[in-house]
Image 1 (cartoon, rainbow, N blue to C red):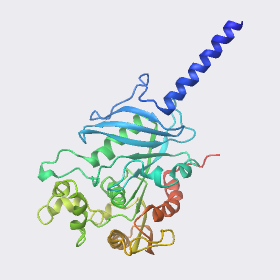
Image 2 (spheres, rainbow, N blue to C red; image 1 turned 30 degrees about the vertical axis):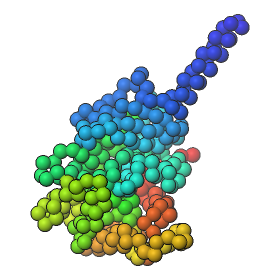
Image 3 (cartoon, one colour; image 1 turned 90 degrees about the vertical axis):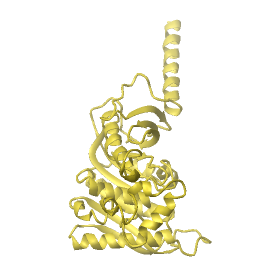
Image 4 (cartoon, one colour; image 1 turned 45 degrees about the vertical axis):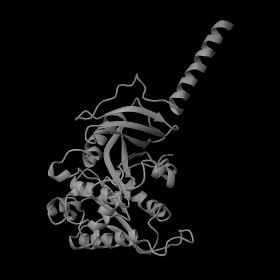
Length: 332
């Protein structure tokens, strides 16, 4: 009896230790059969940070590389279930990383109150949410293909992500969120842009967005050369695609002046040019939507930096609108 009790007790301890190792430091569990995307993209590693946060490594043919994805699962999530959950795909800005939302906002706490999954993929360093032009040859990196095909398939086939989706981004990823919703009508129920570049071909904007990219590579690789490859630029401009947003819920917010707001620290920049540009393009987009009679919830404010100090409060405003659109239920 003592021996049997000891054996059962030891077995329980070993199982607990194994589970703990899997949660805290584990890579992909070899016993779990993961399904690849249609083009062969696959999850090659899984690392649980805590009970709700898992970092994945995805080997992507579209990108020609392996990239990270952070996922927040619902509190009620289980691997072995037939239940699926609505999803928010939240993208990071041009010079940030896939951990930005959990590092700089309380999105983990906010999402914990709902039966919703949050997927936060890598978007590259100024990858600009585009299948790159590459002089007309196309080829890698194909960020749009990764985000809208490979990633969706992997999440739905392996982690019970549902097909009721919202998308959200800040700065360049606000552009990505709205652009994806426009280029793939019906893919997303709701799109949120916080200080996004929503009129890519507005006068002066191409030079500014290419300047950022030029810090690391030839910026003409992304959409081509303005004036020569205008057709491709316009095909990736949310403003030009605005009519395709009919039926998609929209929350668009940005500042106008680039001056510090009530949540910004003292001693910052006098004026943030980035926010001025984003404010101008967001205002143009809102006006365009109004002319097309497409409903939009807009918050165009005067003061506020191009920073998380402004974006977190805006996320709190947009969050219940997204949850309603994707029918994410409040958890007890």
